[in-house]
Length: 225
Length: 399
Ligand SMILES: Nc1ncnc2c1ncn2[C@@H]1O[C@H](COP(=O)(O)OP(=O)(O)OP(=O)(O)O)[C@@H](O)[C@H]1O
Ligand SMILES: [Mg+2]
Image 1 (cartoon, rainbow over the protein chains, first blue to last red):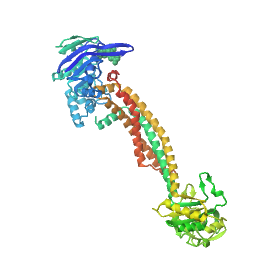
Image 2 (image 1 turned 180 degrees about the vertical axis):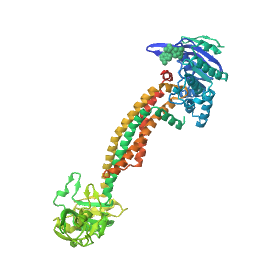
Image 3 (image 1 turned 45 degrees about the horizontal axis):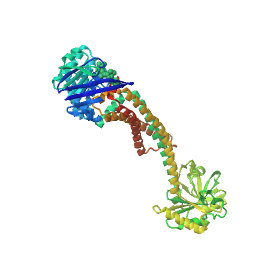
Image 4 (image 1 turned 135 degrees about the vertical axis):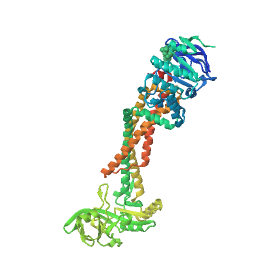
C-alpha cells in the first residue's frame, strides 16, 4: 500500500545541501508493523514525514494505495492525512488550552463530523484508553503517559489505515513507555499499519520488521520481501 | 469545518489569552464607540437644525429685494431697484396655488404697558402669519384681515413679552405703546421656544404698514409665500418670478425656497457628520492595527499548533479561516462593546446635556458593527496568510 521509489529529500542549509534521504526504496503492506531505526540525523523523521504527506520528496515516486501522491494538491493531501493517517509525536503536540476531549475532537471538527456523533466517539476513544475520568483535564494537568494516550486517541479517532509514530516513547519513563507501545501494538493487531521511529533496540525488536537508516539510505531491512 | 465550530475554536483561543484579547478588543471598542458617539452627535445636530428650520413649515418661498448673483449682492445697493411693496405681496397672494402671503418688515422698539417697558422685536406682518409660519395663537386671535393700507392698531404679543409686561394679568383688550404709538392687544402667541439662541417669543406682531411707518421704511424686507403641498415648486417659482418681473420691469429680487435652503443646509450638515465620524475612524484604524499586531504575535507563538493542525488534516484554507475567524470574532466583540459604550454615551449625553442633541440611527449601528468585523477581517488576512503558508514540518519543530 505504501510504495516509495527512489525517494530523495535534500535540504539547503546555508549554501550546503544536506541529503536527508538518498535513493530510498521501500514498500509497506497493509497491517505491517515496521520499526525505523538508525542514528540521529539519519533521516528517520524525514522519511516518516514524507510517508505522512507532511513533506514532499525532491525526487522519486510515492504512491499510497495506488495513488500517486506527488500529483495531489495541498488540499487533497490534507484530506488524505485527515482520513487515512494518524500521527503520534515525541512531544505529544496537544493543544495546551484545550481539554483532552477537545484535543481528541479536533480532527473530527476539521473533517466536519456531526457534533452529536463527535461527543460519543470521543468518549468511547478516551475510555478505551483508560482516560474516561480525564476528559475535562487540560494537557498540563496530565502525566506524560496520559498525554501520549490522548494523542493516540486523537490519531485514531478518524479510524485511519496508518499510524505514524515518531519516537512516541522518547519523552516517557520506561513504564508509561511500555504502556503506550502496548496500546499502539493493540491497534496493529486490529489491522492498522504501524510505522514507528525509535532509538530503543528493545522496542525495535518487538516489531515484525526493522528498517535501518544510515545517512539517508536504507542499510538493512529485515522484512523486505 | 462547520461555522459553529470555527466560532467556538476562535472563542476558546481568544479566551485562553484573556488580558491580551481584552486589550485588543478594547482598541476596536474605543474606535467604534467614538465613531458611534461622534456620528450620533453629528446626526443629532443635523436633525436638530433641520427641525429648527422646518418648524415654520416646509412649503415656503421667500422673496427678498435685490438680486444675488454669483458676484455677490449687487442689486441691493443699486438705487433703481424697485422695492418690494405691500401691493406686490397682495398681487402674489392672489396668484394660483399660493395659500397665504406674509409681507414682512422687522425692527426694534420699546413696548410699554403702564410703568413696565421692554425693548423687543417688532414684526410687521399680515393676517396670514398663523397659516404661513405655522404658528398658533394661545389666547385671543391674530391680526384681522384688515385692508393693509388702513389696518387698525392691533398688536399680538409673543409669550415672553406677555410674561414680562403682564405677568399673570390677562392682556386681552389692554392698551400698550409700541415705539410710542398706541396699540390694543388682541392676542398672545403660543411659545415657540428658542432657535439657534434666538428667543422667538420675544416679539410683538403688528400690521405691516404700521410697522413701515414706525420704522420709517418705504418697502418690505421680505415676502413669505405658502404654496399648496403637492404642487410643482418649479412652476410656482416661475409664475412668481414672471409676475414680479411684470410689475417691476426687471428681475430685481431674489427668490429662495425653503427646499433650496434645506438642501444646502442638509449637505453642509452631512459633510459635518462625515468629517466628525472620520475623526472617530482614525481611532478605529488604530484598533485595527492592534488586531494585526496581536494576530501576528499569536501566529508566531502557535506555530507548533499550526503544524499539528496540518498534521491532523487541516488544509491551508482551514488554517486561513481559523485565524481570520479569530480576528473577526475579536473585532466583532470589540465592536459590540463599542456600540454599547458609544450608544450609551450618546444616550447619557442626550439625557444630561439636553442642549447637545444626539441621535443614533440604527442603520449606522449595524454599519458600524459590520465595519468592525470588516476591520477584523482585513487585519486578520495578513497573519492568517502567514499561518496558512507555514511549512508544516518547520512548524512542528517549533517547540
Ligand atoms: N527542515 C530542515 N532543514 C534543514 N535540514 C534538515 C531539516 N530537516 C531535517 N534536516 C536534516 O536532515 C537530516 C535528517 O534529519 P531527520 O530529522 O530526518 O533525522 P532523524 O533521523 O529523525 O534524527 P533524530 O533521531 O535526531 O530525530 C539531518 O541532517 C537534519 O539536519
Ligand atoms: Mg527525528
